[in-house]
Image (cartoon, rainbow, N blue to C red; front, side):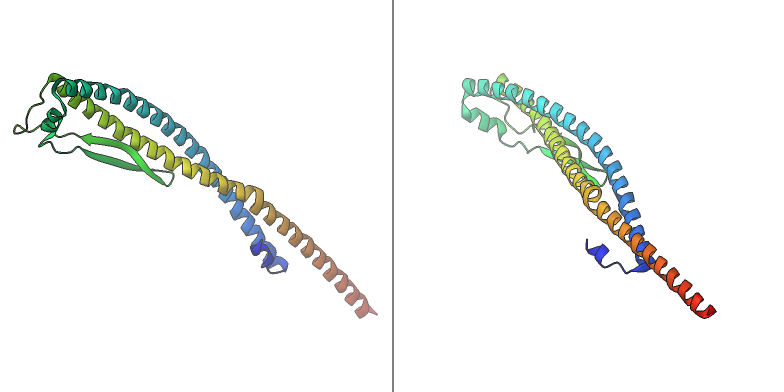
Length: 206
């Protein structure tokens, strides 16, 4: 423990150790409070991730089935023709902060409407596929945001738990041990000083 080895002797050193111990204990208490809050938030985010994953996995097969039907009816060229002139979807991610951790709060998808100049899908199955894929893309964006949020907060849970463990198992015990040694050394020094004063007083009286 570098800090303890550099502590000066006497009362000044004891005060410094006492202050360091108080700071470490308050820090550990605050980190444990943060850890409790983060764990609850992480549990909520993991549940949200699972729900979003389920929604995406339900919607994607439906879109793929409609697409396969449309391709079987009209061929791949019909898909290329239906997609021509269509602008790409845009994803917007809203961010928030939980106990110092910045993470996605939500994701929204803007799917552009088919312009009047674009060719209409060649069959009804492709129309259904277009709508189904729009729903699947929205669900995928929500899942990605939920998963990222759970991962970021989860990483902070692990980091905070390690910091608490380092304080409680290593740093605080070492400070307490050093403080105990400082108390003992100070008590011994005061005892020796008292003995010297008594001997000096007796010598003067003689």
